[in-house]
Length: 228
Image (cartoon, rainbow, N blue to C red):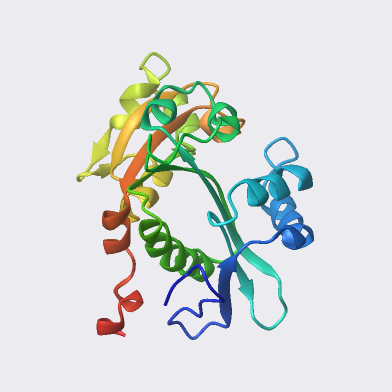
């Protein structure tokens, strides 16, 4: 189906609907923000509405088809690869002016918030083919590093970059980077300090990148009608 129109019902037994977000979803989105993030981390109602209005085709939500509750939200925006790599903070990327469509076909993942793992998968199943159809080629995002706090206590003299790029059995050492690696984000392009407030990450982040076709291939096989 064309993800630009109507709702998407994922091929799971769960009663989940996925669609593009609208400004009138703000109340439900704020409930999700407050459930998932600290006051310092959460987006304001005004900022969420502005993200939707600025990029109405790049903001997606998963909802309970029974109650209408927001289960997952994903906000993205166009960005240049240079800005994604060189920006000093998440805020700099989130607030950057959108490049001319001919200047870049990259996206920046502003945020992914969820209280339901199946809903996250459903959002990816909807969004990735949709973004590819819009002409975008890859996605950058800033990943927290929740294992950094404990690692740094054990290795106080070792640069953070050593942890970010470290692997065990071919996979990133950090659990969040391993999660994104499994989703197809397999390129670590930068390590940033003071990137966004996140206690266990010591406010550090890894800027990671995934080619959209690779991200689609990393979706669960059940998302492919040939395997459902």
